[in-house]
Image 1 (tube, rainbow, N blue to C red):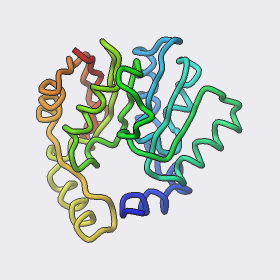
Image 2 (image 1 turned 90 degrees about the vertical axis):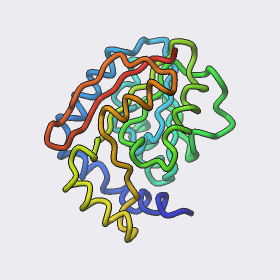
Image 3 (image 1 turned 135 degrees about the vertical axis):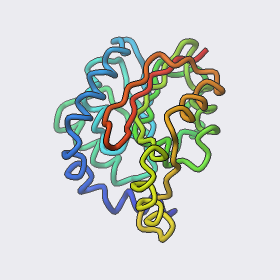
Length: 206
């Protein structure tokens, strides 16, 4: 088990408690995301965590496939689906490079609060591009911590000593450029939280 997996497993049971503080932001993300969904969509929720978003949008799509490296997060998401009698969510503990996911399989891929945690975000975006159908959408939310240098400095210390996963700092302009060079057309960008510099991005495969 690698360090990021251990970290997310360790905090899984308290993850929703932490995230309740950001409920207004999550509600905003869910409502904005619904604008891009249809009831025939097959969705991949990359880094699905405890299902905070996939559970809420399951009724708007045909199928949600959740994937996360944390087995504990997956257990919680599965339990939520059972409790709410949601039958169109299928979660696996794996990575986005799992061979069970085939090219051009998904209409929409979520990547909420995960791109800044990746060692090679461009490589992952290439994989997302491959998995999306023509004109498929990637929808993401991410903190652009290069726009908050003091906050990033504090978090980077935690990453260096292994308390939290390492975090990549982005500016929104840098992030948008990564999407554009990856052959995505940005449809919408919006700042979700001015103080924390969190951004919502919806982009279409070209």
